[in-house]
Length: 408
Image 1 (cartoon, rainbow, N blue to C red):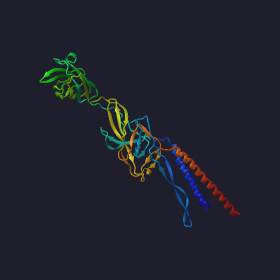
Image 2: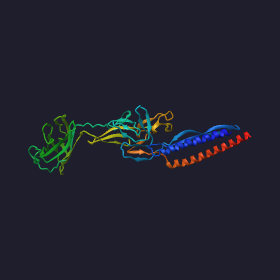
Image 3: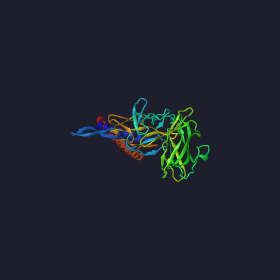
Image 4: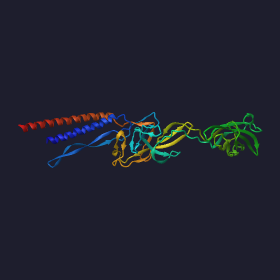
């Protein structure tokens, strides 16, 4: 009888010790990014039968429950620090190909461009097309480290107004003589090597022609007409100031030393001729060589790079995994989780898809440990330990008395 009670008390002391480990772990990780608080679930052991009824035989640790509720999200100074708002886990892959999951979104870009998780493993995601839509399979997210190749300009457009009150001029346009033209506008274009060139259009009011007002134009590249083709023509406006001809002249071609020839489509269809000061804007596509400036991540987990030439290139979308049963996940070394039979198969998608939460860029999720609650638990467990210890002391006294009776 005394031996049975000692065993029961032993289970109580062991249960309290296990619960103390859980509370201690919670308090130790109160500042650990993405940590989920844990608690112990106890169950009663079956003891002996008394008058046909079972008597409790102590306590056992039945399992560990984890609190997967949202932790507080705080701002970070790093653009690659991410937090999940809602359900899900970041997907990580170690060098051996093993997949693990975590709420800790502290990430950095490695030396070779790999996006690495807090423990140095690869962050997984999906490659995207230019529009930012997933177009690949699950793979490590890699940030390109090289320059962005230049893009040669292919089109030039003008918009704005030509002053209807401009004086009529005669003779050929001479870019070096401002008296031969009424207005001009310049824009930047790029050749196949990324070299910048200045394309300038000069407009001259040639006066009425066939009931319309006609304007002559001439284009130069870097101040010269040498090597240019399709760089002159006329536009005409009706009596309401609307363009009626010459809005889409042929392509302007240019021979560039050391680079491929330029071939620019030209569009003047947005020009008007009203009684207002001449004011034109010229735009062209193309870009110079781009050097990476910064990595950016949006709320959908879309990773992009901003380049020095003003381009922004979409790279990948960070993956988010959800599980049928989060409680079934197995905690592994380093604070990451592994899939188990109890957790079920993960659904891996992009942020905001299905049950997956959204991404908060430049943020981290704090531990969801309630320190006050844990400290109260410590007091309760201390009292429980003292009670069990007192029971053990009493049982020891009873056992000692019985042994003395047997020896007398």
